[in-house]
Amino acid sequence: MQLLGFDIGSSGIKASLLEASSGKEVASATSPEEELKMDAPRPGWAEQNPQTWWEHVVRATTMVMKSAAADPQAVKGIGIAYQMHGLVLVDEHQQVLRPAIIWCDGRAVEIGDKAFAGIGREYCLTHYLNSPGNFTASKLRWVKEHEPERYARIHKAMLPGDYIAMKLTGDIRTSISGLSEGIFWDYQSHSIADRLLEYYDISPDLLPDYDPNFAVSGELTPEAAGELGLQAGTPVGYRSGDQPNNALSLNVLQPGEAAATAGTSGVIYGVTDEPLYDEQSRVNTFVHVNHDERQSRYGVLLCINGTGILNSWLKNELFNGLHSYDKMNELAAAVETGAEGVTVLPFGNGPERVLGQQPTGAQVKNLDFNRHSQAHIIRAAQEGIAFSMNYGLQVMHQMGLDIDTIRVGHGNMFLSPVFREAFTNTTGLSVELYDSSGALGAAIGAGIGTGVFENRKEAFRGLARTDTLYPASELQQPYNEAYDHWHEILQKELEGE
Image (tube, rainbow, N blue to C red):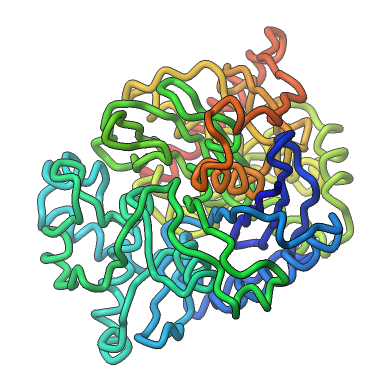
């Protein structure tokens, strides 16, 4: 008996096949081989074609099934993880009306800020736990204001994972967790955020009906099964945004537990049973995957947009593909902590909520042409990413989250020894590394949602810790000094000095 998970990322689509009896991954595949392109029709915008995601879902599925020589009839459930906060619009024939406005697109910042003031800061924070900000509801309002003819043709507004589920099942549905990440959910009334929709003049009829995250929300249609090479009728039993799903993949489900990832974006995600919020909405609270009527579970999410995408930009644009990521990590390790004064602010991938949406852009400071090399820039970039995540972690601590250990999947930026060292010693946290992935988490979620797994112990029996990293006493002082230097430069930038 096997379970199939998809991770619908902005840089690529990953599929993972899980053997239910052992909890071990049978095979995985990623499509395309190079990162997917983000289109930017205007500065600060970011779009992708949802049909492109589906095409790579088909390719990744074909590859993973072929790699494992898998029997389609053995696949008993499908789960979906997806890039959060995006907006996909379809008409009554389920045809996409425009490119998806994805998570790092900044066009709706002013709309959300105006709603925050118009509805009232206290009301928004107590009812939505966030400013409407640059989230999905505000992006939908942007379409209404700027593309009224297209808006008039909308049948349903969806998140990226809802679109993939629609392609699989023919049904348009979402989840409470998904509604919360779009700021469509009222935590006080435990229902749709009617006041925000009324303020935006958006009909609630545009939103899909919702299910729990762990629930069979449809079955694979014959058409989709034919494209994927799977069995028609296979249940789709789970969907979640990528960061709650990353937490699930690491068995982070209870208050006090936390997960992190450093892919295209960098995230720290802590679980609580209290509806906490930051007064400035610099970090954001959403419904966690295991929230239900019996137990309240919320995920507090810090997101740094400019993380792995900075590393990718250095590799492909600045260095023109001259170095592999492994070589870049090797170069970074040859430079001392603090990169001999070079400082990188990694905020070049859309508005950063942790900075109050201030458009600082990515910056390299203190570069000396006579002393500094590519290695210094790489080192400073990796440290800058770790420092920015620590900057946001302090906000989470101020909210009352008590975190002393973080679980991470052994991938992306955490493959870099320099980044791991900088992250651990700057935050002062122990870091547990696991052999896991977002697609594997989606497969586990499918097993829970379809009832293949009877309990949590069964679901996570294949989760294997590969290493634990601890702060080193001899490294904490130099990293603290480097962080203080970085923080001083950031503060001057934020204050306009």
